[in-house]
Image 1 (cartoon, each protein chain N blue to C red):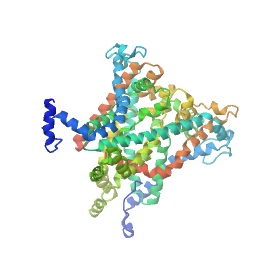
Image 2 (spheres, chains in turn cyan, brown; image 1 turned 120 degrees about the vertical axis):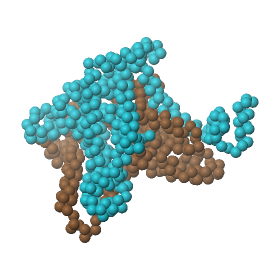
Image 3 (cartoon, helix red, strand yellow; image 1 turned 135 degrees about the vertical axis):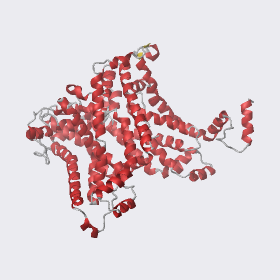
Length: 325
Length: 301
């Protein structure tokens, strides 16, 4: 019997205090496994899933530091250090990709207040029946798949599409596919996104609004606040925590821009404004099979994304005293 | 339903409302009506176009609110496309099997991680949350899927997205809300963790289970990107990837063969209707669960 297990045996006679500092770690682990063995066993499939499909790819980031050749395997390929990152930063398309990604991200961020405003507008509706019907209908686009929505947009803005025809009659623009003109991409992309998500994104604020104490409004009315003042001093502070959380969550996704949507809407004629980092990763990696290079590009994107979340969270902690973690 | 709570002032006070306030009410209703029009008109246009006579539709300019000459030719062409049906079958497989596994594993993991007595719980949870904000990215995932031999199999649409961390957190929050006393008394009766999960806990968190089931099902229904990465055989493609070929890449050759060439555009509209109608039919019945889910997510925040 080892000294440790002797100590453990001695401890075992005392009343069980698992979190006590005096109990040796090995004993605590043993006891934890004894008590919760079945629970750990139940966790195994999920842990294996995360290890293979979540952490596996993270280790796979290593291929951005080597000259990965599938035939030679990861360990047989030559280590090249930061070569791929350097070649990305000096890539002919680097500036364009970065600017397109940032531009879409910034415009996307500028639409952030719209669902809040929509929620406030719905909240102020006098007729409850109208408000319910409006909500139900405004959520509908969320249930149509992105592929179908982008397909609809492409058809409607095609050379014979209804929107193109209407714009032709109103403003005399040329009857050609709107998405063949690089200048149109950003607007169409954002409008497509809004059409699909605006109604749905307002739900969370509506549910936050319904949680505001009615007495606060009554008190404000007694003080003579009009509707605008009530909105400013009662409603907005009431939903501010929700807004902050949504903002942080949005920051985490913003640099990934809806690349699936971009990929569905763009075509080579408008790469100059539509091509973003993630779509470039896809083309370089899976069409051209430049695994190492595209992994490095993807990693750059991921690190910037992660940093944005961290910074937003920090700022929110400073300003608000509350963040995500 | 996320309800709008503002209590109406009693009738008598209405007179006192200022002009500005009444003007705002009118503008408010107008803005919402405008938004509704923006959402509904394209949908009406699609349905109307899909039932239009292809030749008349091509000649028509602008938005349609009613079919231009009634015809079901487009639908006949769409129904002839076998890939649409294999797509539907593959999607159903992924939605049913995938969602079942998703929910099963999420429930098991969420239950285990919600138990405070599990010493490693918080550490494991931190690791899982980390994957929400940092990932290996597209190419390493592709190589992993290839490495484990899933490339070219329909399981590649299920296994790489087996658990969604956000849904796991929603589920865990629900389990954490169940009073400990219930579990303790079951334990005294000699029940183990597995039995407690399915006999005691699961029935208590049914609404949350419904919510994550819907979330998983919808994400499987909508997903096309993984299929594009991991599949090569068109007969394995899920519906959305087939739709991408028809709608985005304008590949209607499977359906227009032997038909009038004018039919191409109305076929796309008919395809949209065929591919979207089932979801929109279920929508009114499941909508309240979605809304509930958003609120659960909000509480978690």
